[in-house]
Length: 118
Image (tube, rainbow, N blue to C red; front, side):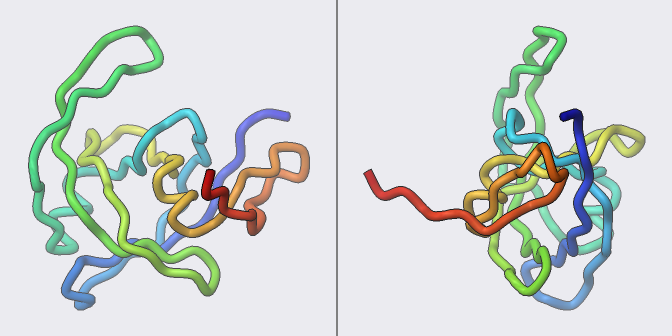
C-alpha cells in the first residue's frame, strides 16, 4: 500500500496569501504540519504550543495556528503545526476529517467519506 501525497492549498486566515503544496497523507498525524517559514509568510500566526509524540518516540513542543486548507473544491479552517523549514509536509487526520475526506491507500487517493456522529 505505502504512502502517497496530495495537493492542497493553504491560505492565511485573512484570505490574502496562499500557497499550493504537496503533502504526505498521514492519518497517524493529528494535525497538518507545514514549514514554519511558509506559514509565517502566509500571515499565519502561532496561537500556542502543544506537545506531540514523534514516530521515533520523542516528545516535542511545537507551535500551532489556524489556516484555511483547500483540497479540490472543499475548504475548511484547520489547525496547522509550524514544522521545521526542511521537514516533511504532512496532511493530518484533523484536516482530513474537517474536509470529510478519507485516505484510500490502495488507490492512493483521497475520497469523500461519511461523517460519524456517534
